[in-house]
Amino acid sequence: MRPLTAGPDEDARHTTPSPMLQRLAAERATGALLRDRGTLYLADGQVVHAESPATPGIDILLTTGGALRHEGWWDAVAQAGAGQRVARYLVDSGHVPGGALELCHLGALYDAAFFALAPTRTPARFRYGVSHWIGPVRPVAVDAVQRETLRRRELLDRIWPDALTDTAPVTRTAYPLDAPVPPRQLRVLELADGVRTASDIARELGRSAFHLLVDLRRLAAAGLVEAVGREAAPGAAAHGLAALPETADPDVALLRRLRDALEAL
Image 1 (cartoon, rainbow, N blue to C red):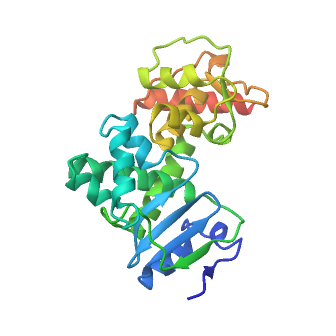
Image 2: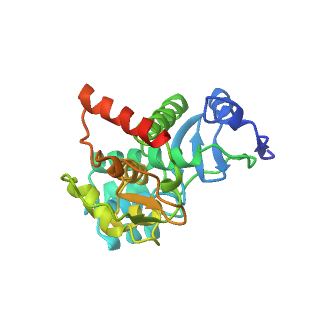
């Protein structure tokens, strides 16, 4: 069957991240949806795997996190890659507990899908019958993947609406740390050297790239990081509002709105 192609503007016109993906789910298609920033693999209309160059793969998440030794991963690829049963081999050989593999795979799937479903003007293509060498783990409904992608976009915009730190190299600003910063964000700050991007930092730390974006946007909102090559915005720190704590306190929410209004002025 010839590859299915979507027009370059199709996905950008809808609130659904990918109407083409929705159609493939309805027809219970099996194959690979190739998009500008990643690939989603479907089996019987459900998402079974996702990959994106913007985020660490499941191999990095498993090995950096300590759930699996590097030798164990490459042993599984060598023994079961050709048969497209790497995941099954990892569990059956005792390299990784089944529950740990499912959790890690689910995290990697949603992470890569978020980037793969980013708005684009490049045509998407679907190759029928293509499957991934990792093999079956736990399929996810297309609706769930699309909802989670939209939820993540909205979360990032609520934290800080400027998306430049998502893709550009990031660097620390000259603003001092006026309030405690969580250890996880401190590690991100240490690697914000003006050369690394969010994806680079995520790979180095072996962390979800989306969660890395969340940390960077919070640091940007606090005036502690900025994208390289652009003049620093006034920032929260310039108004004495740096490092507002992460809380649902309505007073803090008011301060955030005040900060945004000051920057707009």
